[in-house]
Length: 124
Length: 134
Image 1: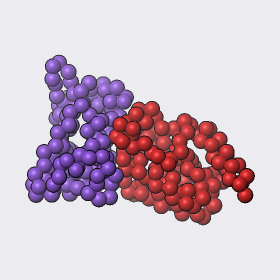
Image 2 (image 1 turned 90 degrees about the vertical axis):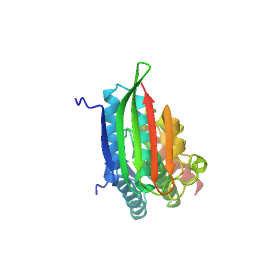
Image 3 (image 1 turned 180 degrees about the vertical axis):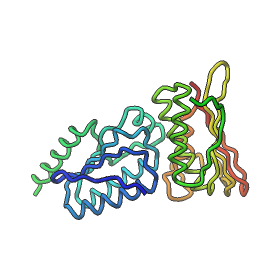
Image 4 (image 1 turned 45 degrees about the vertical axis):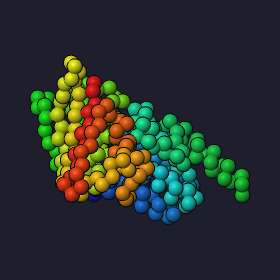
């Protein structure tokens, strides 16, 4: 089975999904990310889905789970780069990705994570 | 480019779900669907392929190019010999799930296509047919 690589950039984990994933691959990514967040103490997760031509309910659910798991492990997840046609289709499918933070591209995603981190450090 | 106008793809494993998405993409490109139409049709095919595999215990996807009133379209049939759908009303309700999923497969796919039909007989199987017109 294929596994999606997770790159570490400072306190952020970067995942770029470039293949049409099998369901198993999506499940494995969820587990790999959870472990990596715990191990590295990352404060942010950036998931780039700009190469994905479709997001169905399975992948949508995976993105929502990752966001939830990361939040519990004290990391913020931002999904970036969703293609407009994918967004249109997702909403019509009935999936609004509630609870999942999104940004138009990687750059904005990083800004969002930086703001989230600064906000968090102000609280303490 | 292939000149075939119909065909069948087995849906017996997770890899077949990926294969169905790729096949439907190729077929949509042959019909020159818009990007949004193509995305909707591939997404619907992905949902229904997974349903066939997970709920129907496997089956196949038949595809055909169809024509109506001078319009061309792509029709997909997802067929299995699984347990069938006991309560069609419930199965077509957003958020209702027989287990595991989010309950978006059938009602969600219906919204993504132009024509949608389900035939199911308890104990005999299910056929879901969808069409998207250009």
